[in-house]
Length: 214
Ligand code: G6P
Ligand code: MG
Image (cartoon, rainbow, N blue to C red; front, side, top):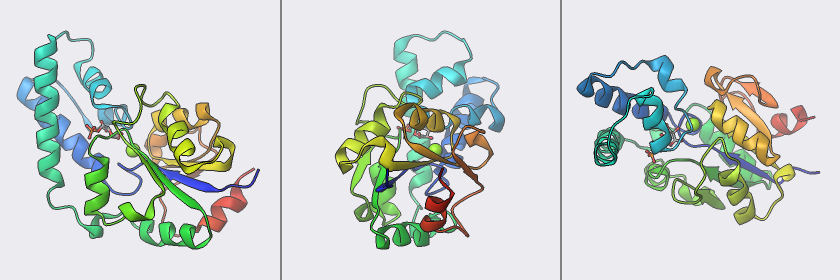
């Protein structure tokens, strides 16, 4: 079936906010005396805030009020790190890739677990390029469940087999595969499960992606 849409994860795919999520969790972990590392953070990529907290806790039990307070603190640290984001923070090649895909007649979507996705897209000045934006408010079951990408496909008006999902997270690649999409895994944290594996979006065109699909 002909590909009609490209659907992008946000953090770690369009911009390097994955680094800011990491720094915010690391600050919380340090303050609470919980061992945490950049490697452990890779397991959080793509996961909703609550699921990320569970990864951080590594089986530690905290009461619900504390869990809520810690998530608010992490988000406050993250939002502070976002304050300087501008269109310069699009990852290399992203702007050209999005514009070329649009010029080729593809529909564009975002499927991000983040409740901060819309403000980040606005700061990057790319929100208007997208036909549909699914974020941390769109579905109940986050990645690796396929629900978010299926929700975005529905908004765009395509079947999953007509879409390609771009992800930097293993949980996101899994979600897209479970939903029936083709997948492009970007960077090492995406794992080996994607249809196409790339370091990033620079030096490749949408047409080249289409020719590399099975
Ligand atoms: C993205 C990131 C995750 C983050 C999640 C929730 O998927 O990859 O690291 O935990 O969004 O983000 P939020 O901004 O809602 O806390
Ligand atoms: Mg990501």
